[in-house]
Amino acid sequence: PVDVEVRDALRARSQEGRDRAAVVSHILWYTNQFYTVVIDSIVVPLAFDDGNFDVAWQMTMINWQALGLTGIVTRLAHHSAGRARPSTHGCSDAPGSTNPCRSGGPGFFAGHVAMTSAGAPLACAHHAALPLYGYWAVPGAVTCGTLIAGAAAVGVLRTRADKHWMTDVIVGHIVGGGIGFGLPWLLHYQHRVTPDLAFLGVSQ
Image (tube, rainbow, N blue to C red; front, top):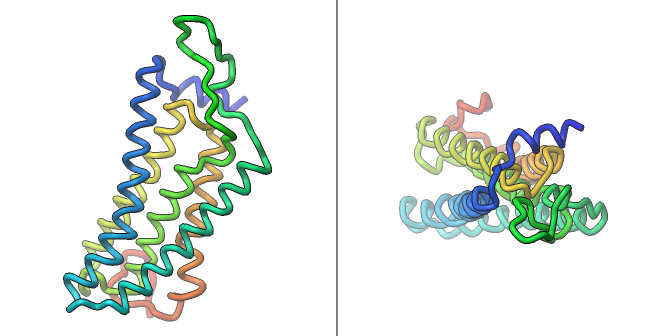
């Protein structure tokens, strides 16, 4: 019942509006992960740390560990749960229908949300362990907060696009965020905290 109520409140009323929301969610899906994987992990250490290939390589491998695991878990959930997307709820194939039936595959849990929710805290974990922008907290805090806001926006947009139920989105945030921050922190960074990230409340 709560899923249905949230869907009714957030879903765009027209198909054009739902399509626009889906397009914006695609853009954020790419840009959020692109920033973490390319800008922070490759461009910054190579361009601003005297061509530090070792850091760039190690960060890239950590990125693929976290994002790869998130993608695998997401696909396993899609194939095992098989939950229908909300767009199939009350849809119609009648000409001119405001809710045409469109098969988008299983919807649990939200893949766009999981991947952006993994990419954002992954960047936060990198910044918590490495002074990528120097030993000043503000740039890292802004990056981390902006990417998290982008991931949250993807969740709203996927609901507005009628691609996922609210519970699909919540689980996507939990799974993606947990892997995105937890995996690099537990396996690589928990003993490598720098003063750079006081904004995370972490101290040496």
